[in-house]
Image 1 (cartoon, rainbow, N blue to C red):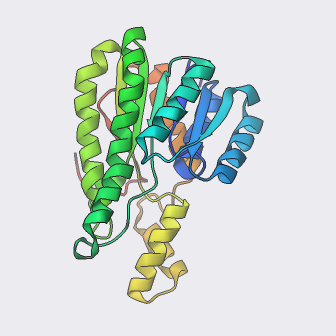
Image 2 (tube, helix red, strand yellow; image 1 turned 90 degrees about the vertical axis):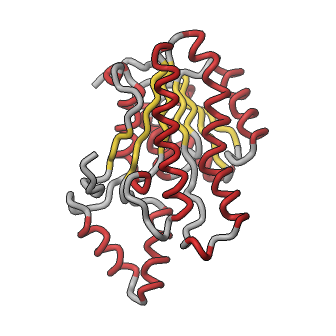
Length: 264
């Protein structure tokens, strides 16, 4: 499918690995000029090289950036617009906040989670929205988590803040849809990333069972019967940024293999 976004400028946050990298690759394959960011310079450059090799090399750039720092986000945005002009597509993303139950979490961990999960989204959106509105074209996709709808007691901070991001998706859609700036969210289920492995390790240690046994139990609980690959999420994100999704705004799209059991 031609998503009709060839030449569009896309910023994908935390894109050196996992779902962010997959989203960047899917957008690059659709002809977007893709700007990556990440904290680990070596891993970031590796991702840039791999994505360039699978798409068009002159359409991929990378900027070291800690998404919890406003100055880093501003520098990444300046580097992107300086090279290619205004941003058309923004994919917000970050690593998961600390995984722990309520009474274990400290106030500093809550503050760090808010900075990494919420404030980076607010800051990035404020950077790109003025030009999107002026040109009357924009796509913003927030990568959140299935815990926005199905909270998890180990993911206390994430469950709280991801639900807030779903509300933000709706309020932003209400405000900017008439400017043809469409805002949606993707709720991944269990995806084979480093984060999933880390969570499986925590749970298996708590229960005193092998990580392989716990990972298999998680997989059996997914109606589709397997974990997702990052690329399956990346392709959905790219679709939401294309012209085929031109009447879709304010939605939270579950990409979870049927994991979420709520009706609405």
